[in-house]
Image (cartoon, rainbow over all chains, first blue to last red; front, side, top):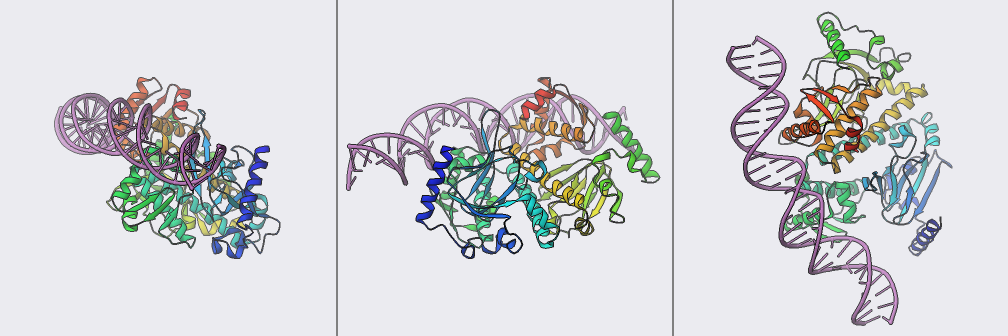
Length: 244
Length: 244
DNA sequence: CGCCCTTTTGACTGGTGTCAAGCTAAGTGG
DNA sequence: CCACTTAGCTTGACACCAGTCAAAAGGGCG
């Protein structure tokens, strides 16, 4: 609790200096923002733009499921912890993404949710959202699409893992980041990684060393250049083809 | 389980030669059957129990999405084909399972769907199901649960792939088959694999040889015995622990 | 019984993990 | 402003697991 309080203070301080009260009209995810799509219908359903500090835990696994988290800015990761206290990441989320869809069936959070950086999230209560579905057909369709496309994305992720080698996984990962930013209207060959090498390696089922070695390899092949968390894609086609 | 399967095969044989009118009361998946749950509401929405022969293609990828496939008996696999004509399986489905949830968002079938054995499926049209959702709250909740649990299952599959070694993947796979049959009311340590080694290997991201070697290894460890497509689990706890 | 397809087993190679050391960059305190 | 500290990242040497190629064994079906 003390720790939580401390980090809350931190984020308020950080955000204040950068004036965090961004109006939704200026929100980076603009037309893709689920809260905005719901805006006309929701009233008090949505607690908008809750701030979380880097590394802050939003949710610990197995607590009762009450609401989704929709990222306004920053990034989240979801992970499970195995019996031997090993942490396994199974999801990385960017602005515009919704977290918690898997919890509808289990009625509890299946994963821990943690902030990768200082992050603003909109919190959307499940029960109240459901009550909207009966009256608003567009809301219903939107939720179905979100669920279905999540399944589709996981199918693609499974393919990535089950067959691809380390360099192909890394290429797939970086290209998918590019595409996700592009879909949100940020089409740039410069990509800022929100997570460190350890998180990337963990997510891709590799080791830190292998990620590092293959990043070097991609640079030698003139496909991209990497400086810390900054990636510049030099050859988008080559990157795409490598990832298949 | 073997006995049950045998009788199912027998029934199927007789049905193929004569008619397919198996009463739902004899259906193996009984209370978990989605069509039955919808029975009171659906009328002509459901084409019940369409027969498909082993290896028959139900759906080729990219055709427009119209309906879900719910397995009555037998088994299906879904797969994509890469540019170099390589076939990658991304789903294996058993009686009671529903196939096609990922297509809601894309409005087309993302995968090919093929019968692993002679299979009876109930076909459920999406559009007409949707019209039920507005009036039937239990139907709505059921579909949400199906979608959500599919996401949850894929999350677990991703974990399996991203970190586990060959023997652990195989253990996870066999244990998950056991659990899936158990959830459908067939709690038996005897498991009949519907697919060949090549399909298992493909699905697990391994080679046939590695699957075979590790099956031998599991037998040497007295965890199970395997004869062709018949698996007998000798030590369920050991199997579960190995898969984590 | 014999053919063919599937599965198993063996020998070898290569990619990735492991362990260890060195490097870089950012933050801290003097 | 600079030396120090520390965490994160990179590079190297080696071992091991899984892929590849090859051959033998098993199983189903005419």
